Amino acid sequence: MRSRPSRNTAFFATLTAILIVPPGARGQSADDTLERLESWLSRAWEEAQTLPSIPDASLRWRVEDRYVPTQAELDALRNEVAGRPDHPKRPQLNIYERRLRDGPDVVHYELWLDGETRWRLNTNFPPGFLDGGYIDTAWAPGSAWKLAPRGLTIAESSPETESAQTLLSSRSTFTSHVSRLLDGGMGVARTMRLTERAEPVLDGTRWSVVASSEPIASGVRRRVRFSGVWDRDADRGFVRAAEVIESPSNSQARWDIDSWIYDDTLGRHVATTIRYRADGVDQRIVFEGAGVIPKGGFDALTRTPRPGETDPIRGRVDPPAVRDHTRGTTLLRDEEGRLRQVEVAGESPSTKAEGGLWRGIGVAALVATLLVMGVLWLARRRIMS
Image 1 (cartoon, rainbow, N blue to C red):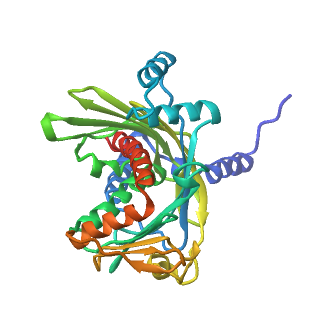
Image 2 (image 1 turned 180 degrees about the vertical axis):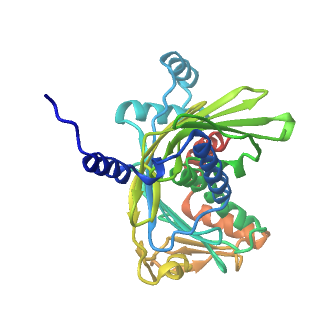
């Protein structure tokens, strides 16, 4: 005959059950979960509209561009450029051929970020791409510059100037990546001008919310549906997917997040892998960990590098050309390796600097770079839309 448990045994069993249940799961009704979701979403949405400050580490990730058109589209493109080496679509065909042969194009990024006012983005390209080199861009009060193997560009630090606007275009590169890595992409509300956000819908632990824009240029309107899961233990939500629909063109884009981890160095959750797809774009954005802040901190990272000096990341700075928009000058290295100022009659300081630099580097290099940068610009436009 089976004995009945004593009252003390039952009491301790009940007490143990209560203690081992996570606090976030005890007594959390559907209404309570929805209230917590709405509170978290409002906070997270607002925080995502500005760039965060990461004072003690860098954020490192890579982007794998793997898009290749269908076989029929590829054959049509090959026929279109056949026998025409200067055809404007040939660089694009070369990219597709390379991806078919070697796999996706992989670009590595490292970002030191101190909110909106101070940042440095290091972009490292694969071998054979833009000389297999890098482009470093930095922005801080009184300091704005871009460094690459081809040369150093020093821009005016006032955002309204043309040279600063060109440099600040680099920010659009990392803004969308950082948003998807850190907040699941909610930060795109700013770039997509999403001004209306509906109440979230909760189904168990799964949730969704729709945000939309007012009509923009030519009546274009965007609608984004975010979906994710609610983590009771963390008392927060995690975006797992987002779908973008643009009307009246009905063009679409989507990103899916594989998983989230908590990074102790960054002190926050980060998406591990993001798959982004749109018309002509198929990318994987992969978190590669947190880096370090070099000695001297943000001041050293963003200080304008000068020829002959040492940069905390790249080492000794010996650019073949220096374009300085703050002085309206261009310096080119002569045959003896010395930097000499180049004067071009009939040009303003800004165009003199621009033209002198590229003439010194070479017209062929300029054409090749512009073609590649054009492809990158189109891809970024698709990403931002």
